[in-house]
Length: 525
Ligand code: BG6
Image (cartoon, rainbow, N blue to C red):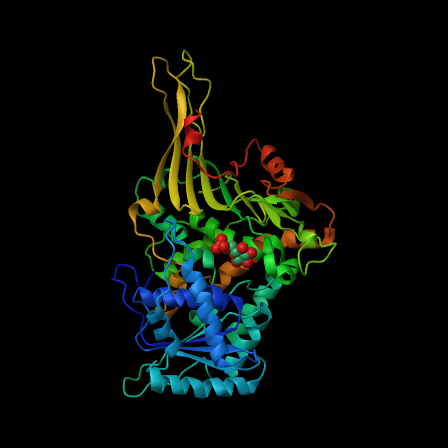
């Protein structure tokens, strides 16, 4: 955002993209489709090359063919308006011509020697100018090792280029999960810092690639009417929901070790918390924004086990399909105590937010897919309706719907037409698709482009990652000690466990219903 703020969007400068894990699911499902979309939008550099690294024994041709198949599938996906996408053979051909592959094991020093030679080759053939983005799309266990080996092989610092004297850039993009607790995240940060500077590290949180998440900043800081009400005086509480209908699918082995809290909360959900809670930055420069986000997270108190719920899905029906329980998923332990749902309350120790609860919930196999941030405003201080039929006020909500159906809506009370003074809640809604053309997007386009242009605004800094783990560490500790004790359950296809309702009821609050939003709901009055 920083580097491109205010300027027309231009293609990134020359570079090579090295993907570790080029045979994996992420590369097929998201990275290559994102590159294809970037190329379609004219944002990839003209002088560009991809070097894919994996350990599969299949041929290079088979690797390309499997990427092409995945791309065809991704480009058929319907856009937000329900229009099926179209696969453009010419765009693919352009990419395929720039794709190279190296087969090897990440722990083999010889691989890095071969990579060096390959990069020299891409510089000559594709004129990538010595700039390299290393993308670690690998299992997390490899992050530290690959970075160290790149460092030892001298690949993280390019020599200054010829007459210009300008040093080509080297950057490393790292997927989540970054560590599995506070200690391991600190250790990984320390390992990375041994071989590169913080300004070379791009820690991805793909939620930040979502337009509606980025729009929170625009909404808050480009509209003067928001700031005066954005505080403990006017806001009663905040609810953040990331509900999924999918289960763990083919990721049982990873998920059973990870669980819902680690998978979603210190990263995706805390990024949303930071966007809502941060103070206004002095500019849209990456460091100005990241400093304010880090400050907001640093003010969050450690989560308390007594104010958190963890639960696991049982069998049930999701979107009309019968599904079995989590413990019967492939590669999941039959007596697993891993949670697939988490709800918690957070407190932020700042002048702006003291006493305003932030309630977070996320889970799999729920009744609907939907991510939203809902801000509940305090009621009017006085009810001058004593002599009328008005029994009470409905709540005022400001809701950012992140997906699906990207929108911002405001719910408030109006007078119902007729001779009597009666109130009815209504919605005022802005829907992205009504105002802007919706571009094909898998969510990684902005992030990859930003790595290429050196804009770190949407990436996690070391301190933000560590703050995230610090906040959830008491839950990780308590839940590891308790095992299955205290683990609640919920039927697949439900709105989650009753214990999550109780968490809010204890504070006279209620979760917003987890049903698809329909404007008609408001008209029931
Ligand atoms: C990933 C998690 O980071 O985010 C998944 O590992 C989760 O478990 C996914 O399903 C949700 O992302 P999105 O973009 O599909 O909402």
